[in-house]
Image 1 (cartoon, one colour):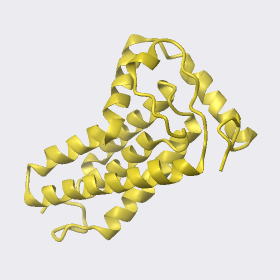
Image 2 (image 1 turned 180 degrees about the vertical axis):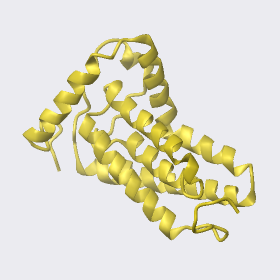
Image 3 (image 1 turned 90 degrees about the vertical axis):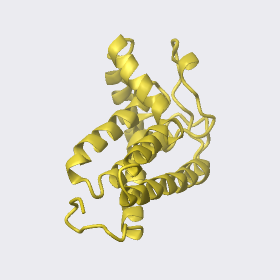
Image 4 (image 1 turned 180 degrees about the horizontal axis):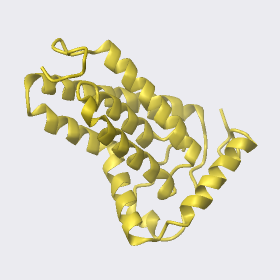
Length: 192
């Protein structure tokens, strides 16, 4: 287990990567438009609200879509358990230090910074929401990137936390997709 006081728990190369991303992002912080977009994305990512709402809205369209919404919510519950109660407990990484007014506007989790649960949930959801709807994949992945990146922007995660969370979420979504397929799923990804 990594000590929470270790400033570079994954070595100097990762520390340099995190510092470089932080310095680049810091140039954009404090601009109202960016603050609004990324703070809103971060809020909507709390408890995977945005992804459950997307699944529920789609689930209203057909029985098959309802099955997909159930799969999405069940998988996100399992993803949260694996990431937040499993992987995060193996690491004691401190979150970036907050300065400015963001601390008052955002929920600051007490768990380890590594990996990002928002990023994991976002990419897990993007995989599943794109499953039978490949034409929508760019939208879902772009939204996943915004939610994941928001955690760096609002200083609740290091960039490496987000990269790791994104990879974990993508893998969990792909495993769920392969294990839990709809009986009416067409292999070409088209609508029935």
